[in-house]
Image (cartoon, rainbow, N blue to C red; front, side, top):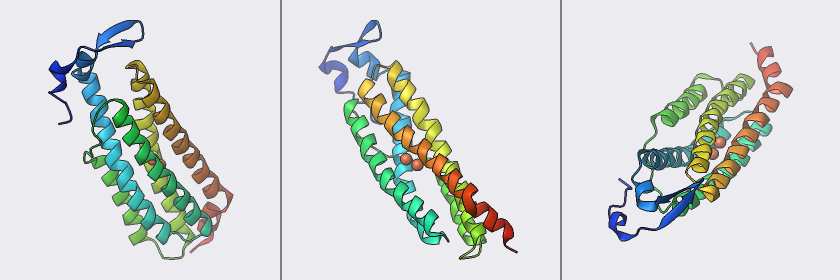
Length: 192
Ligand SMILES: [Fe+2]
Ligand SMILES: [Fe+2]
């Protein structure tokens, strides 16, 4: 557990949160803070797993356009990992991974698509885009919720970082829709 018991007696530092002043230790022991930290560990695990998954998806994709999109987002995902490390630091917690069953399932789905579609086909790309968008939507829900919680709890710098990542996940989702609708879905529909 990340809860630092040694901090319970170490300080009575006061933090201004909204209009209230709360004891930092009280905040660290709150159920909401614990949930927030747990959720950060969950998405920290997820982002690391996504880096590997995007590698496989990039190799498996048919079109250069989709390969490039996966490559670009893999670079962004590495930034997401380092931003999360900054968020942990800002709230004085250690970056730890907590196994996330949801992302494991979504990545498994992408791997199944690679197995069940023909190499070099547009159908594979159409299906991979949807698999990738499911991952983006999971991230969008997570970062959207965690950014709001960070604001509520007075972690403004952490909220800024979470919102920057949220924006990149939303942009990626939008780009993938564009790629699908510009040509890939149409070309896939022409395949036998
Ligand atoms: Fe991400
Ligand atoms: Fe993402």
